[in-house]
Structures are given as structure tokens and as C-alpha cells.
Length: 317
Image (tube, rainbow, N blue to C red; front, side, top):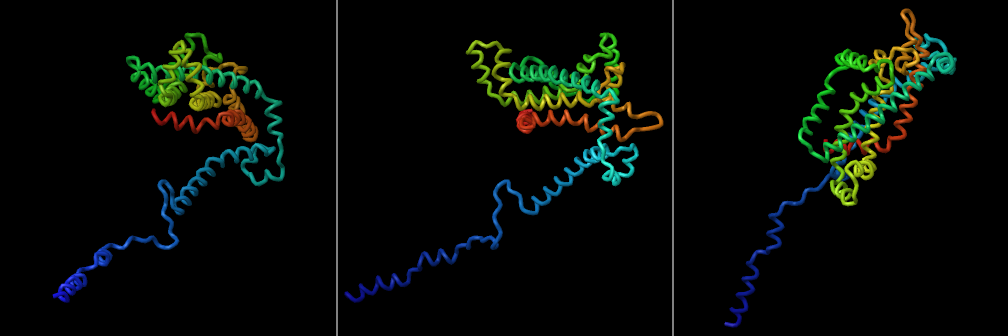
């Protein structure tokens, strides 16, 4: 009896299946990556995709930079026909074209006129765009959406359609052949876009800042000027750069509204090198390089704000 009872548990233990062995046999083995292949992180590109992107960027950069380099190279040729044989310029590089433009033309007067118009457009345009963008962002007055859509619709009309109506308006106001004519016209072009941009940027600034200004006794304009504008420097930099470029090298309006030679801007002055039977390509190239320098300097001054201003303004627009 004792022997049988002892044997029974032993046989039961022997017949019972091993749980670990059964579980191991039925489980799916884990997937393994091929040796040497690294798993990409989220947002990370593969090597082939990175090479493709960089290749496209290099080609696009070359396409953008080639005309600039070509103009700069042609400007160093002393003859107006050197653009036909650019390879020969290396043997006779000269800065004679720049000397001729600065000393024998009215370039400095054109430069002053363009600077007055561009800075005037920049200051007035940014102020109006910032004020309207802030008003729409914070006050939500009746018709604010319609106002912003009206700004957008004004961008759909080409220059050729607006030329005659604007000319008649400026003539009736007695503003033809004045700096104010170009400043006001360029503002009508730049303000709608800048208002949209700055409205989106102001939307990213917490409304609690306005409330804190009111608690401290600031007026709405005081809150806008002392608290909001310092925080909106990146957006203001983008708006300033856009308005400056709008006025700096524009030629269509300037050639119609500026009638006196002493009121010519740089873009109009550039056309004086083109006559009925001849075109002075060397002087035009040198003048083009000189025109690009102030715009490049302005870009250098505001470049650290441009990316931040564009991305933040686009987030809520």
C-alpha cells in the first residue's frame, strides 16, 4: 500500500506536460533586422532620400545663383559686347564700369530717391499692417473677417489694371511726380500681405499679455506699442523686408508716376542705358550689382528673424 501510494504521484508528475516547453514551442520567434541595418527614427530620412533631397537643393541653389554670378562677371568686362564672349573677361578684368556708373551718371541721385521711397514704404506699410493685424487678432469687431478677405482680394489685380485708376487718383490729389505717390502706391501692394502675416503672428502671442497691460493701466495702443510689438520682432522683420523689396526695385509704377529726371529711382535709371539702337550691357550689369547691395545688406540685418517670423506667422494664418 505504501509503495503504490508513493508511485502514483511520481507517475502523475511524469505524465504532466511541461508548461514552459509547450509555450516555447507555440510562440512566434521575434523578428530580427538584417545585420547592419539601423532602424530609422521618427522624422529621419534614409540615406538615399537624403542624397536625393540634397541633390535637388544643390541644383536649385545653382539655378538661383547662376544669374547673379553671371551679372557680376559681365560687370567686370570693360566692353559692352563682352557678354557675348564671357570667357575673354578673365584676361581684362576691370572696375571701369563701376567708376563710370558712379561718376558719369546720376546713380547717387537715383539711389537717394529709391532709399527715400523704400524706407518711407517700409515705415508706413509696417505700421499700418501691424495696427490692422493686431486689431483683427484681438478686437474681433464686426466685419473683421470680411476686412481680411478684402485685403486678400486686392492682391488678385495685376499692375496693368491698376495703373490708370491710380494715375487718375494721384493726378487729382496733386501727388504725381512726388515721393508720396510711390510710397502710397507701394503700400497698397505690401500692406494686405503683411497684415495677414502679422495677424497670424499676433495670434500666437497669449492674450494674457494684453490683460496684464490693461491691469497696469495701459491704453490699447500702449499695450500694443510697449508689450506686443517687442514680442513680434520676428514678424515685423519679415514685413519690413517684404515692404522694402516691394519699393526698392519696382519699375512699372515708378516709370509712370515719376516724370522728372531728378525723381528717377534706381529701376528707372537702369533703363537709361537702353536706347533705340544700342544697349550698354556692361553698365547695366554694374548698376544691377550696385542695386542689389543695399537689399542684401537689409536682408543680412534681419535674417535671424526671417525664418521665425515666417513659420510663426504661417502657423495661425
